Amino acid sequence: MATHLEGGSSAWLGVATPDETRRIVDALSRVYELITEVTDLDTLLESIMEESKEVASAEACSLLLYDESRGDLYFQVALGESGDQGKLKNFIRLSLGEGIAGSAAQNRESINVAEVSGDPRFYETADKVSHFESRSILAVPLLDKDNLVGVLEVLNKRGGGSFSDFDQQILEMFSSIVATVLTTAHLIEQNLRSERLAAIGTAVAGMSHFTKNIITGMQGSAELIDQALAQGNIHFIETGWPILKRSVERIGNVVEDMLAYSKPRKPAYVPCLIGDILGDVRDTFKGRLDQGDVQCSIDASDASGTVDLDPQGMYRCLLNLVSNAVDAAPQTEGEVRAVAHIDNGKLVVEVSDNGPGVPEESVDSVFEPFFSTKGSKGTGLGLAVTHKIITEHRGTITVHKSDLGGACFRVVVPKNREQG
Ligand SMILES: Nc1ncnc2c1ncn2[C@@H]1O[C@H](COP(=O)(O)OP(=O)(O)OP(=O)(O)O)[C@@H](O)[C@H]1O
Ligand SMILES: [Mg+2]
Image (tube, rainbow, N blue to C red; front, top):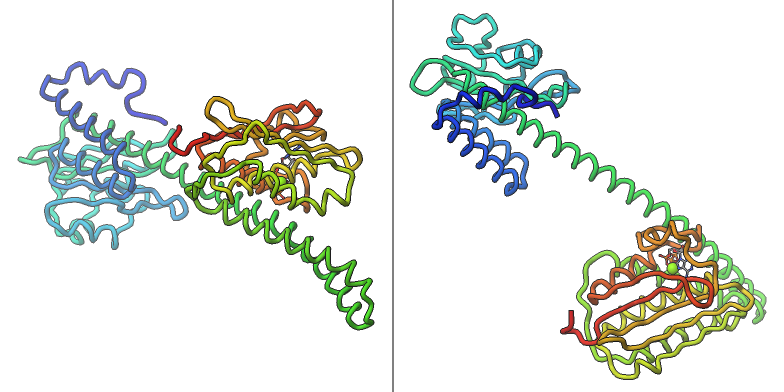
C-alpha cells in the first residue's frame, strides 16, 4: 500500500504546532476506533469522511470511487450543509481529468485550489445539482500502490480562505487509511466469494457422484425385484432386497450427516453407558462384518459407570469411526477394536484398525468436510461431522498410529457435563 507517509514525507509533523498535532492524534484515534468497531463498510466510509470534514474544518466533503470497468469516478459519500449533496450520488459521474477531483485522479496528485471560480478545471454542474456554492477545494487521490482507488475531497474552508498545507497533509494521511480500508474490504469479499464457490462446487460434485452410485444400485435391485414379482421367483428378491436395504441405509446416513453438519447443536445430555452405545454400533455393522473376514471387538470394561453424553450424537461419531476402520481394514484378517476407559474424569474411546493408517500429510485434512480418498464410495462428511459433535461435547478427537498397525482415532470428552 503506497501511503503519503512513507519515506521522509512525514517531516511536516515536526513543524506542526502542539495544537495541530493534537488535532491529528485525536482524529486518527477516532478513525482507528471506527475501523475496529464499525463492521458495515458504507457506515465506516461515511464516518471517516465526517472526520475528514471536521479535521480540515470544511463545510462539505466527498468520497469518489474509481469504477475500473467504466474508467470514471462516482460519488460514494457526499456530506455537506446544503443537504442536497446526496443527489451527487445519483446524478454525477466524472471522467478522469474532468473537474478538480477528476484531475487529481488522472495526475495521481493532490490539488489545492483557493478560489475555484477562476479555475478552468472546476466542474460547475456538481454545484447546481447539490445546491452548494464551492469556493475552495482540496482534492487528494486514493491510491493502492500505483492503482487508483478514488478521490477524497473537502470543500470550502470554514471561515473563508483556503485549505493549508497542514490540511493537505492530514487529508493525505486519511486518504491512505481509506484506501487501505477499501482494498482490504475488496480482498475479503473476493476471498469469501471464491471460497464459498469452491466449497459449494466440491460439495455438489462429491454428493452427485456419491448419490449417483447409490441410485444405480437401487435401480439394479428394483429391477431384480420386478423380475422376481413377474416370474414369481423368490430367489431374485433374496438377492435384490439386501442391496436395496443397504442403499436406503447409505442415503439415510448421508442425510443424517448433512443435517448434523449443517447447523450448530447443543448435545442433549443424558447419563449413558458407553458400552451400550458401542454395542449398538457393532450391531449396525453386523451384516457387513458377517459378509467379510473383519473381526470387530469392543471393550468398555474400564468405563462401566454412566457418562453424560448425547447418545445419538455419540452413536453417530462412533458409527463413523468404526465404519472408517472397517473400510480401512484388510478384507482378510481385518481387525477393528473399540476400547473405552475413564481417565482423570474424562471418557476416552479409541477406535483402531490394522489398515494402512492415515498418512502424515493427511492428518489435518481428514477432518475437513468433503475430504475423502474413497471416490464415489464416500462423501468425506463422516469425520467432519464426528469432529463437530465431539467439539460440541467440549471434547477432542485426534488421530494416531494404532498398536494394530493402522490408524487409531482417539476421542476424549468430559465424563460429567458441568466439567470443562
Ligand atoms: N481408519 C482409517 N484409516 C485410514 N484412513 C482413514 C481412516 N478413517 C478415515 N480415513 C481417511 O479420512 C478420509 C475422510 O474420512 P470421512 O469419514 O470423513 O469420509 P469418508 O469415509 O471418505 O466418507 P463418508 O462420508 O462416507 O464417511 C477417508 O476418505 C480416508 O482417506
Ligand atoms: Mg467415513
